[in-house]
Image 1: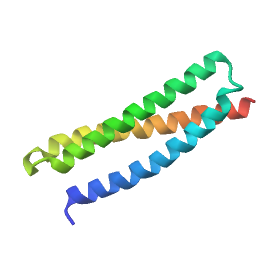
Image 2 (image 1 turned 180 degrees about the vertical axis):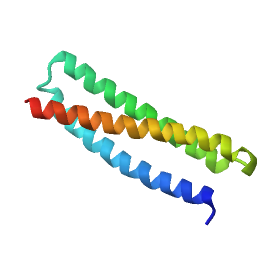
Image 3 (image 1 turned 90 degrees about the vertical axis):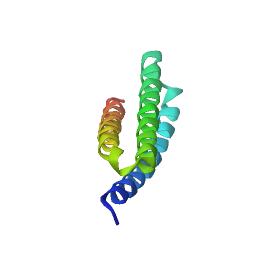
Image 4 (image 1 turned 135 degrees about the vertical axis):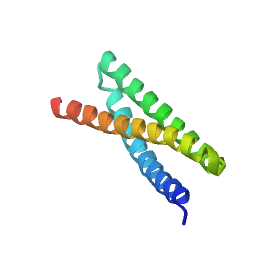
Length: 105
């Protein structure tokens, strides 16, 4: 299997895992929205919207990589790496923020 295909397969697996985590996080947030103060409710929605945007960007970059010629692969891979890192950091930050919020209640 080529390095390109390995990267794409790995990315697709990770995206599927993050989609599942995002759904769980969204469910947790939805349950908390009823009890949350307005400021916290707005923050929950902002975080979810940001994660969904980062997820869409990463998925779009992966599609570009899948369709790219070998010559364009390195340039597009760099963009995918950045999108991947951004999404990963976003998930970690959101998880940390909402776990901290859980502990304060």
